[in-house]
Length: 248
Ligand SMILES: [Zn+2]
Image 1 (tube, rainbow, N blue to C red):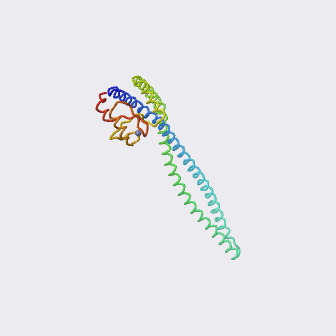
Image 2: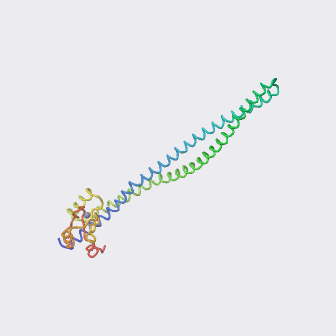
Image 3: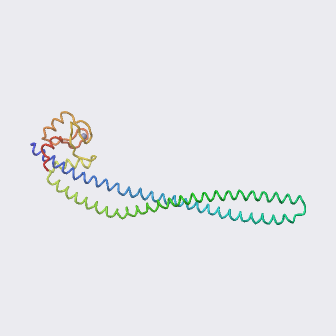
């Protein structure tokens, strides 16, 4: 074919590729957007699990605190009673026995007081952790709500864009001779994106491999639409395009 027809067809194919670039970008967004939402939902659920765990710990610590308070109370009452009894003891042996008993009761009480302090510290730590996780939980919830309501709007926008692009695609395709268009479509549905690529400095920009010299000479002649022998994509010489078909 003549150079003029060749250039015209390459230009049409590049225009079609531009529409397909936009469609490709939208399709990637369609894949990414719900995944981002899922990630956020997962993080939200994680904070919920963490929160439940902290609440469990807090409940357990509070139980222990109650139990300890009761025990300390009981012991204090018992020690008080023993002190009163001590006044009424008849002999020395009994007196020492009672003193020993009181001594060990006081020791137990002291260790309970220590336990009480440790429990109070642990409670404070868990309460701080709860405050932190509550804040994170609330922030995530808010973000999630915004994202969820944005999702519907975004879907609508994406559908509209795709509809417009498909219209544009039909218009652009109509001008391309059927066999050339079929060749493009054949590659598009079977190969990795994109379909048509420039050759720069003798290198196919689709696969980044040098085009064999014979093919490159033919490509420069500009009379026949060629495929890269390596990746099978349609190729054109970038300098041709810049010189002859840039005007649009
Ligand atoms: Zn290639």
